[in-house]
Length: 479
Image (cartoon, rainbow, N blue to C red; front, side, top):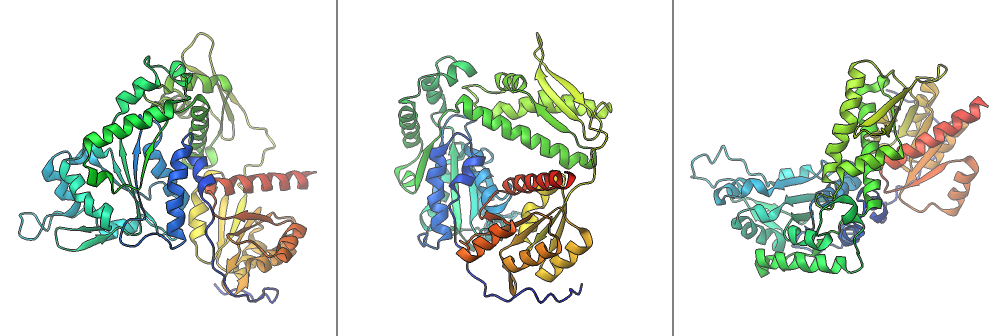
């Protein structure tokens, strides 16, 4: 496509993008475990600043604690913050390597052994690189439930944790210097549970005295680790993090996140036929009573939501009892263990046309990062790779909101935003940057009504900001 020339755009030199703290972002995804966040983020920052030590992994972590407290979720949340998807993790389920001969699947059989060509190693440089992204070159490797693996697994890992290298069966090597390695374990979990609450149960466990509980749990966990693993293995771990039992407040936050995920799932799968889900406080209390406990933490919560919320909603959809755009209000019924559902119809004058968001980004990574979240939120998406292209699309499509990256080829995002503002005065414009803008540009943004979004951010944060600006703009136009 040939873009028209727009002389209003001036040429500027590109600048390097510095690294910002990721702690607040990770804390929004990992609920109730601040110690884990504080332990991990410094190693991410050292890597991104180019100061990680040479000749060893960027960080090695052993995550301990009772089941359902968020050990595996930590790694998935970090992957979402760094790469935009919780699937960007190279996960090894150690329960599959309980026999000594099974460990060979990690590195492949050496030449000369029967089946050498058919046995592909699981830990290769290609697979390690596949879980990185253009947003971050840091690969996340998870050895889940390490205590279940055969002893040869820990011996194999000694070289990886110490020298960041692994020799495969074909004599090639894999370099782990650009990796964070996580080992999760339930060692000592039963003893921890006795410290948390002698009597299992959600209410009793959550209201137990917690003043010295953290120290007791850490002592129990470390004692169990030293009994299981050799000193040379433990000494290669940078941080041992003991997870605390989730408080009732943390469980409520986790429930809120999972209900939001269910809403996004409904939008994604049903498209224009989607509906809104509103779970009242009584309904949330019932879900917590059924899905959370001191014994299992939040592990049962997702299954409880699936059984008590998702399945009834699916039955209502299949029976055509929910019209597109309706609001389904959910509350706990009197004298019933099940949730009650009430459907409220959409207003007749509600506009079903989805809002359009224009993204201006030359590398395409931002579009990929936001595409799924925006579409789940009910937005249509347009993408431009230059200022001229953006002006053409804005003129043709009349978007409801515009996202502009500060660094664009041959021009400044500020100048593109100014040109778009002249062409579309009423459209909200959001400027994304990872640098502190000069005072003159900050003043200019304030005067022209540009919203400044500081990187790094979560896709959900941007979607919320866009929705708020679009709704405000629509109310202003209606009035």
